[in-house]
Image 1 (cartoon, rainbow, N blue to C red):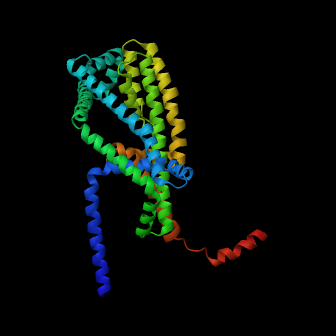
Image 2: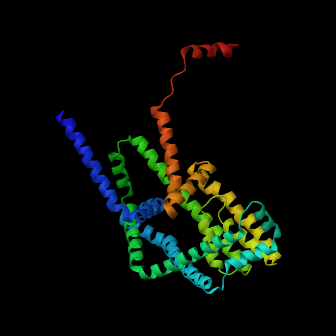
Image 3: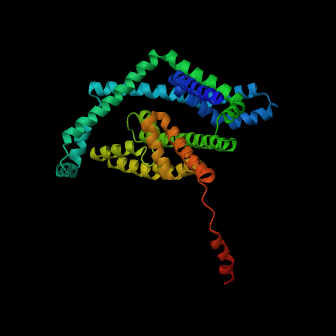
Length: 364
Protein backbone atom coordinates (compact mmCIF):
# COMPACT_ATOMS: atom_id res chain seq x y z
CA UNK A 1 0.00 0.00 0.00
CA UNK A 2 2.82 2.40 0.92
CA UNK A 3 4.70 1.63 -2.29
CA UNK A 4 1.57 2.23 -4.38
CA UNK A 5 1.01 5.58 -2.66
CA UNK A 6 4.63 6.60 -3.24
CA UNK A 7 4.42 5.63 -6.91
CA UNK A 8 1.22 7.60 -7.47
CA UNK A 9 2.62 10.63 -5.65
CA UNK A 10 5.79 10.47 -7.72
CA UNK A 11 3.79 10.25 -10.95
CA UNK A 12 1.69 13.25 -9.89
CA UNK A 13 4.80 15.35 -9.24
CA UNK A 14 6.32 14.09 -12.48
CA UNK A 15 3.25 15.35 -14.34
CA UNK A 16 3.33 18.72 -12.53
CA UNK A 17 7.04 19.25 -13.21
CA UNK A 18 6.65 18.22 -16.87
CA UNK A 19 3.74 20.63 -17.42
CA UNK A 20 5.71 23.40 -15.69
CA UNK A 21 8.70 22.74 -17.91
CA UNK A 22 6.51 22.91 -21.03
CA UNK A 23 5.10 26.24 -19.85
CA UNK A 24 8.65 27.54 -19.39
CA UNK A 25 9.46 26.53 -22.98
CA UNK A 26 6.20 27.93 -24.41
CA UNK A 27 7.71 31.33 -25.48
CA UNK A 28 10.26 29.42 -27.57
CA UNK A 29 7.83 26.99 -29.18
CA UNK A 30 8.45 28.25 -32.72
CA UNK A 31 12.21 28.26 -32.25
CA UNK A 32 12.27 24.71 -30.84
CA UNK A 33 9.85 23.47 -33.49
CA UNK A 34 11.94 24.72 -36.39
CA UNK A 35 15.16 23.47 -34.77
CA UNK A 36 13.60 19.99 -34.64
CA UNK A 37 12.26 20.31 -38.20
CA UNK A 38 15.63 21.40 -39.62
CA UNK A 39 17.33 18.57 -37.75
CA UNK A 40 14.95 16.03 -39.27
CA UNK A 41 15.61 17.39 -42.77
CA UNK A 42 19.41 17.60 -42.50
CA UNK A 43 20.02 14.52 -40.34
CA UNK A 44 20.73 12.22 -43.33
CA UNK A 45 23.56 14.60 -44.28
CA UNK A 46 24.84 14.45 -40.69
CA UNK A 47 24.99 10.64 -40.75
CA UNK A 48 26.91 10.62 -44.03
CA UNK A 49 29.40 13.19 -42.73
CA UNK A 50 29.96 11.17 -39.53
CA UNK A 51 30.95 8.18 -41.65
CA UNK A 52 33.20 10.38 -43.80
CA UNK A 53 34.99 11.89 -40.77
CA UNK A 54 35.29 8.54 -38.98
CA UNK A 55 32.82 9.24 -36.17
CA UNK A 56 33.55 12.90 -35.31
CA UNK A 57 30.06 14.21 -34.46
CA UNK A 58 31.11 17.79 -33.57
CA UNK A 59 32.80 18.40 -36.92
CA UNK A 60 29.93 16.74 -38.80
CA UNK A 61 27.31 18.76 -36.92
CA UNK A 62 29.16 22.04 -37.59
CA UNK A 63 29.43 21.34 -41.31
CA UNK A 64 25.77 20.29 -41.51
CA UNK A 65 24.76 23.44 -39.63
CA UNK A 66 26.81 25.58 -42.02
CA UNK A 67 25.03 23.96 -44.98
CA UNK A 68 21.69 24.65 -43.26
CA UNK A 69 22.60 28.34 -42.85
CA UNK A 70 23.59 28.68 -46.51
CA UNK A 71 20.64 26.75 -47.93
CA UNK A 72 17.80 27.82 -45.61
CA UNK A 73 18.47 30.56 -43.07
CA UNK A 74 20.21 33.22 -45.19
CA UNK A 75 17.91 33.00 -48.26
CA UNK A 76 14.74 33.04 -46.10
CA UNK A 77 15.98 35.99 -44.01
CA UNK A 78 16.93 38.04 -47.08
CA UNK A 79 13.65 37.22 -48.84
CA UNK A 80 11.48 38.11 -45.83
CA UNK A 81 13.26 41.42 -45.26
CA UNK A 82 12.94 42.32 -48.97
CA UNK A 83 9.24 41.47 -49.08
CA UNK A 84 8.42 43.34 -45.87
CA UNK A 85 10.24 46.41 -47.21
CA UNK A 86 8.33 46.21 -50.50
CA UNK A 87 5.07 45.68 -48.60
CA UNK A 88 5.77 48.79 -46.55
CA UNK A 89 6.27 50.79 -49.75
CA UNK A 90 3.02 49.33 -51.12
CA UNK A 91 1.17 50.47 -47.98
CA UNK A 92 2.45 54.01 -48.47
CA UNK A 93 1.04 53.94 -52.00
CA UNK A 94 -2.31 52.81 -50.58
CA UNK A 95 -2.32 55.67 -48.07
CA UNK A 96 -1.39 58.24 -50.71
CA UNK A 97 -4.06 56.97 -53.12
CA UNK A 98 -1.56 56.00 -55.80
CA UNK A 99 -2.95 52.47 -55.48
CA UNK A 100 -6.75 52.49 -55.16
CA UNK A 101 -8.49 49.07 -54.84
CA UNK A 102 -11.93 50.71 -54.98
CA UNK A 103 -11.14 52.14 -58.43
CA UNK A 104 -10.02 48.72 -59.65
CA UNK A 105 -13.29 47.15 -58.47
CA UNK A 106 -15.28 49.88 -60.20
CA UNK A 107 -13.40 49.12 -63.41
CA UNK A 108 -14.30 45.44 -63.12
CA UNK A 109 -17.97 46.28 -62.51
CA UNK A 110 -18.05 48.64 -65.50
CA UNK A 111 -16.32 46.13 -67.79
CA UNK A 112 -18.56 43.23 -66.74
CA UNK A 113 -22.18 44.47 -66.35
CA UNK A 114 -23.32 40.87 -65.86
CA UNK A 115 -21.43 40.79 -62.55
CA UNK A 116 -23.46 43.72 -61.20
CA UNK A 117 -26.69 42.14 -62.47
CA UNK A 118 -25.84 38.83 -60.78
CA UNK A 119 -24.99 40.56 -57.50
CA UNK A 120 -28.27 42.48 -57.60
CA UNK A 121 -30.18 39.27 -58.31
CA UNK A 122 -28.78 37.48 -55.26
CA UNK A 123 -29.09 40.58 -53.07
CA UNK A 124 -25.39 41.37 -52.57
CA UNK A 125 -24.43 45.01 -52.15
CA UNK A 126 -21.44 45.88 -54.33
CA UNK A 127 -20.60 48.84 -52.08
CA UNK A 128 -20.08 46.47 -49.15
CA UNK A 129 -17.82 44.26 -51.27
CA UNK A 130 -15.78 47.29 -52.23
CA UNK A 131 -15.59 48.44 -48.62
CA UNK A 132 -14.51 44.98 -47.46
CA UNK A 133 -11.85 44.67 -50.17
CA UNK A 134 -10.46 48.08 -49.25
CA UNK A 135 -10.42 47.14 -45.57
CA UNK A 136 -8.59 43.86 -46.21
CA UNK A 137 -6.07 45.54 -48.49
CA UNK A 138 -5.37 48.31 -46.02
CA UNK A 139 -5.09 45.84 -43.14
CA UNK A 140 -2.62 43.70 -45.09
CA UNK A 141 -0.53 46.69 -46.09
CA UNK A 142 -0.62 48.04 -42.55
CA UNK A 143 0.48 44.66 -41.18
CA UNK A 144 3.45 44.59 -43.57
CA UNK A 145 4.38 48.16 -42.68
CA UNK A 146 4.18 47.42 -38.95
CA UNK A 147 6.31 44.32 -39.39
CA UNK A 148 8.87 46.31 -41.34
CA UNK A 149 9.04 48.69 -38.38
CA UNK A 150 9.12 45.88 -35.83
CA UNK A 151 11.91 44.08 -37.71
CA UNK A 152 13.97 47.24 -37.47
CA UNK A 153 13.15 47.73 -33.78
CA UNK A 154 13.43 44.07 -32.78
CA UNK A 155 16.48 43.13 -34.81
CA UNK A 156 18.25 41.93 -31.68
CA UNK A 157 15.30 39.71 -30.70
CA UNK A 158 15.11 38.25 -34.22
CA UNK A 159 18.84 37.53 -34.27
CA UNK A 160 18.60 36.00 -30.81
CA UNK A 161 15.83 33.61 -31.93
CA UNK A 162 17.78 32.62 -35.04
CA UNK A 163 20.96 32.03 -33.00
CA UNK A 164 19.00 30.01 -30.44
CA UNK A 165 17.44 27.91 -33.20
CA UNK A 166 20.86 27.22 -34.75
CA UNK A 167 22.34 26.47 -31.32
CA UNK A 168 19.61 23.89 -30.63
CA UNK A 169 19.95 22.47 -34.13
CA UNK A 170 23.68 21.83 -33.56
CA UNK A 171 23.04 19.77 -30.42
CA UNK A 172 20.09 17.96 -31.96
CA UNK A 173 22.25 17.02 -34.94
CA UNK A 174 25.14 15.93 -32.74
CA UNK A 175 23.16 14.07 -30.06
CA UNK A 176 20.09 13.09 -32.07
CA UNK A 177 20.41 9.33 -31.68
CA UNK A 178 21.16 9.58 -27.95
CA UNK A 179 18.17 11.88 -27.31
CA UNK A 180 15.91 9.62 -29.35
CA UNK A 181 16.95 6.57 -27.34
CA UNK A 182 16.30 8.49 -24.10
CA UNK A 183 12.77 9.32 -25.27
CA UNK A 184 12.13 5.72 -26.30
CA UNK A 185 13.35 4.55 -22.90
CA UNK A 186 11.27 7.12 -21.00
CA UNK A 187 7.93 6.79 -22.80
CA UNK A 188 5.75 3.88 -21.63
CA UNK A 189 4.32 2.95 -25.03
CA UNK A 190 6.52 0.00 -25.93
CA UNK A 191 9.82 0.38 -27.76
CA UNK A 192 8.62 -0.99 -31.11
CA UNK A 193 5.59 1.33 -31.11
CA UNK A 194 7.69 4.34 -30.15
CA UNK A 195 10.22 3.67 -32.91
CA UNK A 196 7.37 3.37 -35.40
CA UNK A 197 5.84 6.65 -34.23
CA UNK A 198 9.15 8.54 -34.26
CA UNK A 199 9.90 7.14 -37.71
CA UNK A 200 6.49 8.30 -38.93
CA UNK A 201 7.07 11.75 -37.39
CA UNK A 202 10.41 12.05 -39.21
CA UNK A 203 9.01 10.86 -42.54
CA UNK A 204 6.03 13.19 -42.50
CA UNK A 205 8.01 16.22 -41.27
CA UNK A 206 10.70 15.74 -43.88
CA UNK A 207 8.25 15.12 -46.72
CA UNK A 208 5.93 17.98 -45.74
CA UNK A 209 8.64 20.61 -45.37
CA UNK A 210 10.70 19.56 -48.38
CA UNK A 211 7.66 19.00 -50.58
CA UNK A 212 5.82 22.18 -49.64
CA UNK A 213 8.96 24.28 -49.77
CA UNK A 214 9.86 23.00 -53.24
CA UNK A 215 6.31 23.61 -54.47
CA UNK A 216 6.19 27.07 -52.87
CA UNK A 217 9.56 28.01 -54.36
CA UNK A 218 8.55 26.87 -57.85
CA UNK A 219 5.06 28.37 -57.82
CA UNK A 220 6.20 31.64 -56.23
CA UNK A 221 9.07 31.98 -58.71
CA UNK A 222 6.81 31.22 -61.68
CA UNK A 223 4.13 33.62 -60.41
CA UNK A 224 6.61 36.44 -59.79
CA UNK A 225 8.25 35.81 -63.17
CA UNK A 226 5.00 36.03 -65.15
CA UNK A 227 3.96 39.17 -63.23
CA UNK A 228 7.34 40.74 -64.03
CA UNK A 229 7.12 39.70 -67.70
CA UNK A 230 3.63 41.21 -68.00
CA UNK A 231 4.71 44.43 -66.30
CA UNK A 232 2.47 44.01 -63.24
CA UNK A 233 3.77 46.15 -60.33
CA UNK A 234 5.13 44.48 -57.19
CA UNK A 235 6.18 41.25 -58.90
CA UNK A 236 8.50 40.24 -56.01
CA UNK A 237 5.82 40.92 -53.39
CA UNK A 238 3.11 39.01 -55.26
CA UNK A 239 5.53 36.17 -56.04
CA UNK A 240 6.17 35.68 -52.34
CA UNK A 241 2.45 35.99 -51.54
CA UNK A 242 1.77 33.24 -54.10
CA UNK A 243 4.57 31.13 -52.57
CA UNK A 244 2.97 31.44 -49.13
CA UNK A 245 -0.51 30.74 -50.49
CA UNK A 246 0.81 27.65 -52.28
CA UNK A 247 0.88 26.03 -48.83
CA UNK A 248 -2.91 25.78 -49.27
CA UNK A 249 -3.40 22.75 -51.53
CA UNK A 250 -5.71 22.92 -54.56
CA UNK A 251 -6.24 26.72 -54.39
CA UNK A 252 -2.95 28.40 -53.56
CA UNK A 253 -1.59 31.02 -56.00
CA UNK A 254 -4.90 31.22 -57.89
CA UNK A 255 -6.12 33.49 -55.08
CA UNK A 256 -3.73 36.10 -56.53
CA UNK A 257 -3.49 35.55 -60.26
CA UNK A 258 -7.24 34.99 -60.93
CA UNK A 259 -8.34 38.46 -59.63
CA UNK A 260 -5.37 40.08 -61.42
CA UNK A 261 -6.36 38.44 -64.71
CA UNK A 262 -9.97 39.64 -64.24
CA UNK A 263 -8.71 43.18 -63.67
CA UNK A 264 -6.56 42.95 -66.81
CA UNK A 265 -9.66 41.99 -68.80
CA UNK A 266 -11.56 44.88 -67.22
CA UNK A 267 -8.84 47.38 -68.08
CA UNK A 268 -8.79 46.24 -71.73
CA UNK A 269 -5.47 44.34 -71.61
CA UNK A 270 -6.99 41.16 -72.98
CA UNK A 271 -3.76 39.65 -74.33
CA UNK A 272 -2.02 39.96 -70.96
CA UNK A 273 -5.09 38.52 -69.22
CA UNK A 274 -5.21 35.49 -71.54
CA UNK A 275 -1.47 34.89 -71.11
CA UNK A 276 -1.80 35.10 -67.32
CA UNK A 277 -4.77 32.71 -67.22
CA UNK A 278 -3.05 30.23 -69.54
CA UNK A 279 0.19 30.38 -67.58
CA UNK A 280 -1.57 30.25 -64.20
CA UNK A 281 -3.79 27.27 -65.02
CA UNK A 282 -1.42 25.44 -67.36
CA UNK A 283 1.92 25.94 -65.61
CA UNK A 284 1.53 27.19 -62.02
CA UNK A 285 -1.53 25.01 -61.34
CA UNK A 286 0.05 21.99 -63.03
CA UNK A 287 3.03 22.18 -60.66
CA UNK A 288 0.67 21.72 -57.71
CA UNK A 289 -1.32 18.92 -59.34
CA UNK A 290 1.78 16.95 -60.35
CA UNK A 291 4.35 17.62 -57.62
CA UNK A 292 2.21 17.70 -54.45
CA UNK A 293 0.99 14.08 -54.70
CA UNK A 294 4.57 13.00 -55.50
CA UNK A 295 6.48 15.06 -52.93
CA UNK A 296 3.93 15.21 -50.09
CA UNK A 297 1.18 12.63 -50.49
CA UNK A 298 3.38 9.70 -51.52
CA UNK A 299 6.10 10.19 -48.90
CA UNK A 300 3.67 10.93 -46.06
CA UNK A 301 1.50 7.99 -47.19
CA UNK A 302 -1.56 10.17 -46.64
CA UNK A 303 -4.49 10.53 -49.07
CA UNK A 304 -4.71 13.86 -50.87
CA UNK A 305 -7.89 14.89 -49.05
CA UNK A 306 -6.26 14.24 -45.64
CA UNK A 307 -3.25 16.35 -46.69
CA UNK A 308 -5.61 19.16 -47.75
CA UNK A 309 -7.77 19.11 -44.61
CA UNK A 310 -4.87 18.71 -42.17
CA UNK A 311 -2.90 21.51 -43.85
CA UNK A 312 -5.85 23.92 -43.75
CA UNK A 313 -6.67 22.98 -40.17
CA UNK A 314 -3.04 23.29 -39.12
CA UNK A 315 -2.73 26.75 -40.69
CA UNK A 316 -5.93 27.86 -38.93
CA UNK A 317 -4.78 26.60 -35.51
CA UNK A 318 -1.01 27.14 -35.52
CA UNK A 319 -0.41 29.83 -38.13
CA UNK A 320 2.46 29.37 -40.58
CA UNK A 321 3.86 26.47 -38.53
CA UNK A 322 0.61 24.61 -39.13
CA UNK A 323 1.47 23.55 -42.68
CA UNK A 324 3.86 21.06 -41.04
CA UNK A 325 2.12 20.43 -37.71
CA UNK A 326 -1.26 19.63 -39.34
CA UNK A 327 -0.08 16.75 -41.57
CA UNK A 328 2.19 15.44 -38.76
CA UNK A 329 -0.77 15.23 -36.37
CA UNK A 330 -2.87 13.55 -39.10
CA UNK A 331 -0.12 10.99 -39.78
CA UNK A 332 0.33 10.26 -36.06
CA UNK A 333 -3.45 9.93 -35.70
CA UNK A 334 -3.50 7.28 -38.43
CA UNK A 335 -0.39 5.58 -36.99
CA UNK A 336 -1.87 5.43 -33.46
CA UNK A 337 -5.12 3.94 -34.72
CA UNK A 338 -3.18 1.46 -36.85
CA UNK A 339 -1.25 0.33 -33.77
CA UNK A 340 -4.50 0.13 -31.79
CA UNK A 341 -6.17 -2.07 -34.41
CA UNK A 342 -3.07 -4.26 -34.70
CA UNK A 343 -2.10 -4.69 -31.04
CA UNK A 344 -5.13 -3.84 -28.89
CA UNK A 345 -8.36 -4.32 -30.76
CA UNK A 346 -7.36 -7.67 -32.28
CA UNK A 347 -10.28 -9.22 -34.19
CA UNK A 348 -11.61 -12.55 -32.98
CA UNK A 349 -10.34 -15.67 -34.68
CA UNK A 350 -12.69 -17.05 -37.33
CA UNK A 351 -15.02 -19.82 -36.13
CA UNK A 352 -13.68 -23.37 -36.40
CA UNK A 353 -16.71 -24.45 -38.42
CA UNK A 354 -15.89 -21.94 -41.15
CA UNK A 355 -12.26 -23.04 -41.30
CA UNK A 356 -13.28 -26.68 -41.54
CA UNK A 357 -15.50 -25.89 -44.52
CA UNK A 358 -12.63 -24.49 -46.60
CA UNK A 359 -11.12 -27.83 -47.72
CA UNK A 360 -14.57 -29.08 -48.69
CA UNK A 361 -15.22 -25.93 -50.75
CA UNK A 362 -11.86 -26.27 -52.48
CA UNK A 363 -12.51 -29.96 -53.16
CA UNK A 364 -15.74 -29.07 -54.90
